[in-house]
Amino acid sequence: MTGPLISTEEHFVSSPLDDGLLIARPADDRLFLFNGTARYIWERLVEGAGESELPGLMAAHYGIDLAQARNDVTDTLRRWRDDGLVRACGIHRHYEVAGLAFDIRHHDAATANVLGPMLAHLESDTARHSALELDLNCRDGAIVLRANGVEIGRAKDWSALIEVLLSELFRSVIDKTDWTMSLHAAAVATAGACVLMPGASGAGKSSLTAALSSLDGMQFVADDLALLAGATLDVVPVPLPIVLKSGAWDALHAILPGLAARTVYRRFGRECRYWTPPLERIAREPMPVKAIVFPRYVQGAATALTPVPALDAFGRITAAPSAVRPPITRDTLEALAQFARDVPAYSLTYGALADARWIIRDLLLT
Image (cartoon, rainbow, N blue to C red; front, side, top):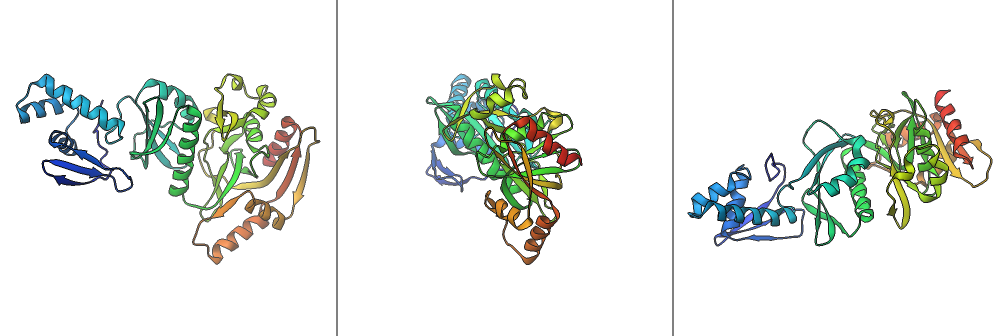
């Protein structure tokens, strides 16, 4: 393994106790008690010693056999990795979404093989300071997920862990991004503008987003979380995987090659598959909003696009739900009101994805 075992950005507090050490993270609720040997290893790591150097340092310091020192170091680091105190060995990948750089460290190839395909479109070749370090480890029959060293999830199956991981990514993006309004909404774009699709769960946003993203010239901007940025109120791309529930699979199989082969998970108790468009159809820059569409799937219904007045549209946005970042000023309200006046809004009732996606594409191209 290369690189330091303790992140230089991570903060620990400690206090000597006899020849040992009491250590903790300020954000965690756990205490760790080190004996004298563990304290020696920890202090060498803090000084920047590498894993390969530790056995020799220990053997010289304690006057012990090198093989014994190597075993002691290996056992200690294994426990510390399990507890999230030092970096995991194994597979390390860099990602970026909405300007948030994050890392995922996998203790083994099995965990990397689950998340790798799901997040491949966010992978970055550039190693940079990460605001979020996620660590995945299989321990005692469970998958353990840590964020910046603190355990945030533990489950027997991947479905629950993926929910926690995506929730943590959403939370981190919201914390780190400059936004004025967040909406429960999807968004798709052409090269120059996007259609924003707010709505409650079950309205058909994700299925429609996936279907639209399959068209040449379309780009996937967001599913579930849309952030209107700063003063421009452009939509920040947050292209986390699209969640496609089982009820939409039949309609999407002909549109999305390979969907049937995707692993089936459970999300909030319902079967789903995660899907992302090809890399060339992922939006990378904030997009101005050309139109707002409130989609509603109704089985067997004829496709109908109906204009919605600004006041009604804003009421539907707030019910989606949405949130405005505090402090809310008069300027904020005036900007949002102007946004509602300037951007045309429509209600879209549809019974066939093929019809609905052409209507939204035409809105973007006209």
